[in-house]
Amino acid sequence: MAMSSAPKKRWRLFLASVGRRPALYPLTTPPIGLLYLAAYVRSRHDLDIRIVDQRLTNCTYEELARQAVAFGADVVGLGAFSSAAYALPLVTRRIREGLPKAFLVLGGPHVSAAEMRALDGNCADAAVAGEGEIAFDSLFQADFDRGNLGHIPGLMWRDASGEIVRNPGLTPLIDDLDMLPMPAYDLIHVQAYWKQQSMPPIPRRRYISMVTSRGCPYHCIWCHKIFGKRHRAHSPERVVAEIEHYRRDYGVDEIEFLDDTFTDDHDRVFEICRLVTQRLGAIAMALPNGIRADAATPDLFAALHDAGLYFCAFPLETGSPRLQEYTGKRLDIPRFLGNLEEAARLGLLTFGFVMLGFPTETEDELQQTIDTACESRLHLATFLTVVPYPNTELYRMVERQHPEKLAGLDYRDATFTYIRVNLTELPDNVLFAYQRRANRRFFLNPRRVARIVRDYPKPHLLPLYLPIFAARVTKGIFG
Ligand code: B12
Ligand code: SF4
Image (cartoon, rainbow, N blue to C red; front, top):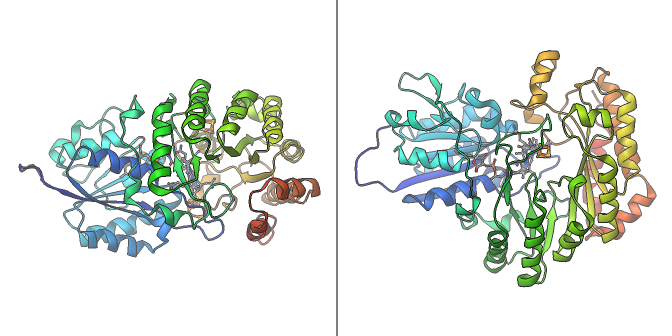
């Protein structure tokens, strides 16, 4: 649409995370990416903004589109995971029918994974892969005018003839994250999230999520590269100012840090802990997205614990040293286990991520991984089967070696352990039997159950998770 007339108009911006809540394990955390985007563009343009998190409202796709239309949006920004990509044709078509002149932009992990294919088969005008703030702002600067879009690095869009094109260059990354305004939590209903299950399996907490750094320098073959490979982080001052703000304005008493590599820069973490202790005494903290556990040290855990850390995920992924090399994770397993001991000694509740079924993985290696997890000090764990997501090294490997395994892969089933794909050379029933056995052996260990009950903050709520346990120990039995 042509929007070049001066003076600049007040835009109506509708932002939504597309994707319904899976029934089986309905995790829901605030859509931080959209909150960062909203905060950034409203600091630079005159905007009325509405944010709808479909994972929270769990409305139908038709209803989501209806809300965008009812809002009378000029610009619609839709963020989606690959698990929700199937819904984009319907949602964008409905929005286009109701708002023929609106500009529709896609972003989020699905676009970073699918890249140009993200625009196939739907009615969106443009798509942004990777970090969104600068690219999204550039669209506003360009007045969403197709004549101006060719200059935005890395932007994918439909040109005047309808052809999907990709501009040269990469979506720009922000060097100094502190130049970003605080995520626009005022645009969502923070308290509504407290009634949902967030990442730590502990219901009903007055928390807020933060992502204080972007970019991970490691090279695990299954992982995304949304934020590049260089670690960039908010300063300790900024992190603690945000925590103070959330405590004051929303009454939160817990922070969930969802960074990929929160502890990458030890000095930053020590300083955050020092400032938290000095200014707030302490605040409950959780690291449910995990840390690079072999790179941590006992004094780092001690500082975090003193500042309020009570929950920490430990991504083991595989107990096989060969597969650690093969997958590029290269975790030092003895150090991982040593740090886990240390965390357990401090009384942290620990959660393991375990992946079963890498290409070339043997039964001995599956057993080695299960033994390592089950014999460790982990309180809780998820045993996942390996899923290749587009635009990862793992996906490219499977595409080269076993393209047939990708053919029937349906990401909409992505309820953590339920997606059915088997990248090994073993029969499905063998892989899924290992997965079932892993869950049974891990959780039906009386000593572990006793430790969970002792260290879990709300033991009376543990029975809520029995249906999930039941689903996991039956995966693959019924076909
Ligand atoms: C927290 C989290 C969750 C939360 C939900 C988060 C939310 N509300 O969005 C929960 C726990 C529910 C979750 C679930 C799952 N997750 Co998750 N999750 C994350 C995590 C750790 C952090 C997300 C985040 O807040 N990032 C920080 C913000 C700033 O980034 P962002 O949201 O991506 O937004 C930026 C850009 O993407 C872009 N952008 C985003 N939206 C839009 C929209 C527009 C219009 C534009 C222009 C730009 C734009 O700009 C933003 C700012 O720069 C990421 C890993 C990561 N580092 O991002 C994985 C990640 C997103 N999850 C992933 C996966 C696979 C899953 C699961 C399938 C888990 C599983 N193992 O089975 C399930 C999905 C379940 C389902 N059926 O949908 C993958 C997604 C891969 C993909 N191709 O879709 C990621 C990338 C992890 C990984 N290692 O690969 N997850
Ligand atoms: S899995 Fe974790 S450590 Fe590995 S590349 Fe991804 S974010 Fe980094």
